[in-house]
Amino acid sequence: MDAGFFHGLWRIAADIEWRKDTGMTDRGADGKRDRGSVAEFRVLAGGQTGADRGALDAAIAAGVACGGWCPAGRWAEDGPIAARYPLVETLESDPLVRTRRNVADADGVLVLTLGALDAGTRATVKAAQSLGRACLEIDLSRTGDEAAASRITAWIGEAAIRTLNVAGPRESNAPGLQDRAQEALGAVLATMRSVRR
Image 1 (tube, rainbow, N blue to C red):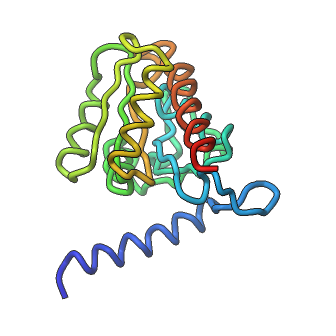
Image 2: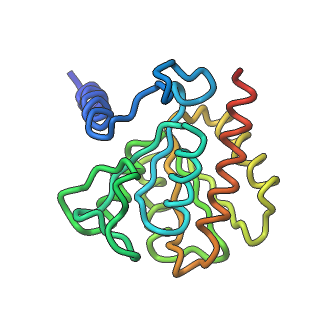
């Protein structure tokens, strides 16, 4: 058997373990299967302030499955990441380990910025390229939320993305990004839900 077969088995096992650890399911709060997007789509992010946190907040608000990997100790620039974010800690404290794992677990990577990429975001783009993941970069300082949401929605459909890793600069490197990311992704998730019903 080839390495691809074993990698596929590993991804299935890792997904089952990840869902068990995070409590992520395809059922809403009422216990019923969500036909809109929860059963078919999930959002991954590392929990850092900025784009990561905005994406997780949008997913939680929309009832969309979410989670991801975060550094050991649930480290973020504003202190330990709150327990309301269903993240699994890596064994290492290095944020690059978390970054690579989130990219590896996704079908595609959405990079949201307010201007230039910072070092951590460039590392995410590089990981997406090396792992062969679809990657879309959107500078929200040059694109309105509605236009961004339309572009993201179209890209998700074209690339057949079911697991989306959202990344971008931390809030201290891009003030206002967390709210902008939440708005843009919230609009995407609302559109996906209405289209799939």
